[in-house]
Image (cartoon, protein in one colour):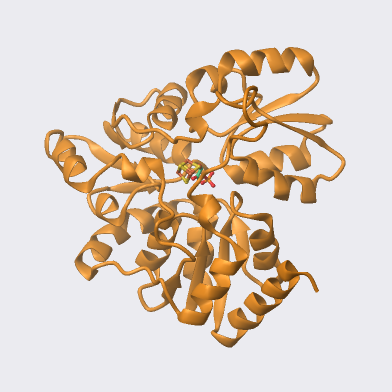
Length: 319
Ligand code: 13P
Ligand code: SF4
């Protein structure tokens, strides 16, 4: 067998031996996504990763994604061991929203309902009333608006602006962004569409307004996959991390998928849209972390208990 096959077989053996299940995001290495599905784990968007980890009976969750995903799993299941191949796999949204500065922002606006994106630390979630992911943000903010609530939103400014436009809610915003989606360019996308007039444009809402404005479908990673699988068009231009193409190709092998242009894509590389932190997950790292039982996500109990409410509220709302 190839080295890759040997590593996959070893990882599968270790998952079984350690009573562990692999919970993977659509942006990680395709081999990890396949392994998760082959071993009874899941590959999904961040909302379903949280739900799957909470509901699964395994005593260890191995999260292949970025740190906030591992933290959400631990907040929901303190009795489980939560391992990640590399705890340095973070997210620019999480990095750009330090808990102390965020707390000061909340303190300055006590009249607002605090809604945070999943892509934040446990300490930021501990200050929030609601957590949302891109698959449920519109519904939750619409419901809050209907109750007359004013919102304090953090940290993704593009997603925040999209929700504000769609719902008409009163939203005061933090100014973070995703380094991957922020690089998609509206003008270049328009030129690409002129070359592919029949193609449907699929956009993750962390992208800039000029890109979202051209979209046929705006949605979470799972919503974009569904759009390719169920769509009648033959061609799709995809404006999100290109790790998603693996699952799209598996589920819709006859469709043509084209990566949306990023700032550097014409000059230096054709596939620049890939999260450097998601890329820290690989088969070798997975095998190592299962063998060593490390690194493990740990969250102090007081923070965990405070952060739990906003995640449970979201899971109950979307159940
Ligand atoms: P989803 O919740 O749509 O999977 O998005 C997570 C993420 O990090 C997107 O960059
Ligand atoms: Fe964060 Fe962007 Fe990476 Fe998603 S793709 S984990 S939002 S940096």
